[in-house]
Length: 489
Image (cartoon, rainbow, N blue to C red; front, side):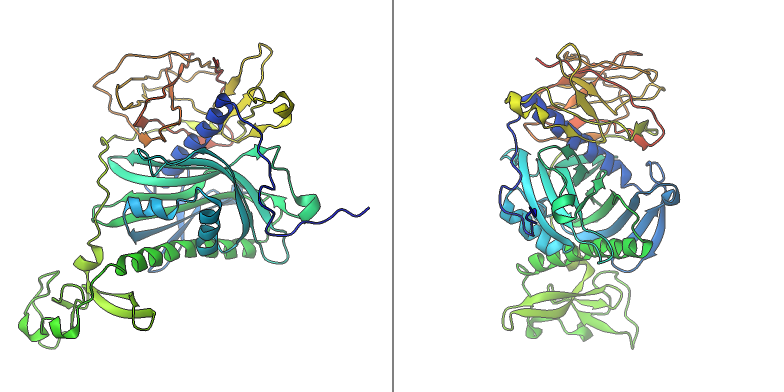
């Protein structure tokens, strides 16, 4: 009997999610938060992150970097960096895909190589107090050129605000998890299951109002012998996403911009200096008018942009001065400026997250959730144990959380070989703390805080937390996994 082959797009609710207990949901959400912190620190180009980025390609729109150790690893690791004229609110609104229709529209516009996708389960939806935060499980299929099979990915998506070295930002991460209720489609559709490791986009405010630094990182294991020329095609397609985002923000901005008619522009002969750089015009120097403010500018301070034309329903190209092109209100969120520690510990790649002991339905215990960032397994005592990738090296590094109502402190001593975690609140706080990384979690996420006393970690969950400071360890394939045990109530 021939097995019926499936086709894209898959039917709605093709993957049936089992009922999750609160402890199981918290474990998956914690994996997403850890992946988000990992992504933010990987996006740095100052050499302090785990990746040693090398410039591979650069043009006026985007710069593409590859990992300097790419030849020693089978994974594909690259980063696209550009500057986008937008705010953090606009960036977060663009990536808000908490419904099936919004997710499909985002894929159609910005991920054209994705041929199918679905939201599997929403774990932490946006709220009125935290509209830019989201955590959920998603699945999508990425198309590859004809010689290779398509790849699909099952990921946890986490969106959150953060502060790094006093700079506010917003990030969206995709990190692979293994869900037994999302099986491989290789036998029915010939799709190979790939692995995303802390992939996503990081937006950070710059010293120029209305301009964001956007970094998009891809750390992918495609599970197979993919020719290098095919990987380069994929890199170029993903790098084009950044330019598409800039064009989207520009169009949205121009829709509300007033373009002055030629009769209201200041004659170029009435100005002797550029309105932006204030440099005196030379006798035969080229001059132009800004179509937004009407002032006269030089060629160096002029930018040509495409704006919607209401008459032709298309686009027309106009000139704007640098001041008008960059006058976009920046985000007004207030977060205390932290300082990033100078050194970060390393993270084992082999650590996993497996959870099978906290499902509501006993028949659903066969469904197991795994992730390269941590592991949940059922010990002999019947309690839920947690193998955590977080471990802090010596030197007195500190991990500090800033709850909404109360501050708490956590210090670290020497690196332990085996550690244990348990729920226990801490009321201490040290005002002299100088190593802080801040993360703003969703309102219904239970953030973790580790209290290390030489060989002991204490894991704390707080439900009424607003601001979070956590240190993200470096990732290393050679570092052994450190075990932490959680005790659930």
